[in-house]
Amino acid sequence: MSEATDPNILPSSEFSELSEQAAEWAVCLSGSHVTPKQRADFETWLAQDPRHRETYEQVDALWNSVNIRKHQPHTGVKTLLGIMVLLGCFFGFPYSQWLADVRTGTGEIRRLTLTDGSRITLDSDSAVDIAYDPHQRRIILHRGRLLAELGPDSSRTQRPFIVETRDGIAQALGTRYTVELTDHDSTVNVIESQVAVATRVHPYQSVTLQAGQSIRMDDGQLQQPEAASPFAASWTQARLIYQDAPLTQVIDDLSRYRNGFLKMNKQAAQLRFTGVLPTDDPAAALSILENALPIQIRQYGGWLTWIDTPT
Image 1 (cartoon, rainbow, N blue to C red):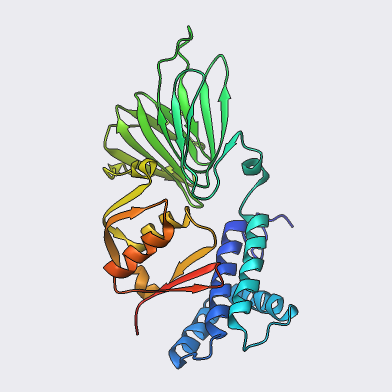
Image 2 (tube, rainbow, N blue to C red; image 1 turned 30 degrees about the vertical axis):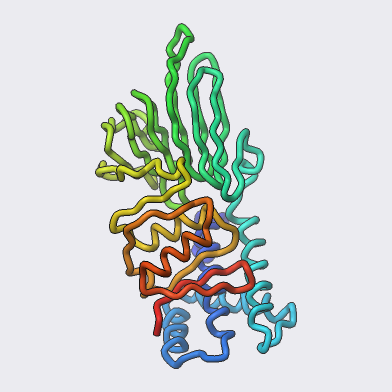
């Protein structure tokens, strides 16, 4: 039976998500002070889907297979997170990203001037292919995000400039815009002039965005255009600027610039943040968040950073 038709086989992104959830529960339950509420929440999570128990048992078996003793919680966290990293290598980082023309490492921001004078800026942990030919100028974004700044095309054909992602294309009708690719969708933010956006499923049904507009595309659908953040390109200056942003978004952004896993509990995920965070000093950024919000930040073995609310 193929993967597309077997309900017991998870897509790789969902498998990775369940593995992370199971690992978080394993970390929680390995502590010396597991509360009755935590135990009840764990049982509720197990009951939500049969695959939850199956995934947890697989992670727990991996934990036990390396003979982790209960009085060594930090060693256990290191080992379990090593397992999660291996899972991510198999399920979250395709070969196309390793073989991309240009890749940036964690914390690296790279600026490139292309053969036509256009410039692209790649954010941390990003990967692109540059596919210029006599008919078009195409940037294929495999991972992360970029800022595109167009130069005039000197060729006779006036080749279109296109940024392509897994979800669709964004063709420049002007000068500056950002494109971001996540596990779930792609986002285009127009800073100057206009950009025509279309999904891969419907390439001839495009929406033209004006400066100051943003749009998401996923599963072959374009969402409704929205007002873009005026700070959509602030990351190019090693700063992240937020106005009443969900803490989940802030943490997702910070995760680009540091190694390991950055996770939070449900209570912390409800918080919102306004302020400026440095991308070139992730530890300082976390300190700013801890001082600005009612949260506690704990480090486990250098690989897991856990954010929760004080009890």
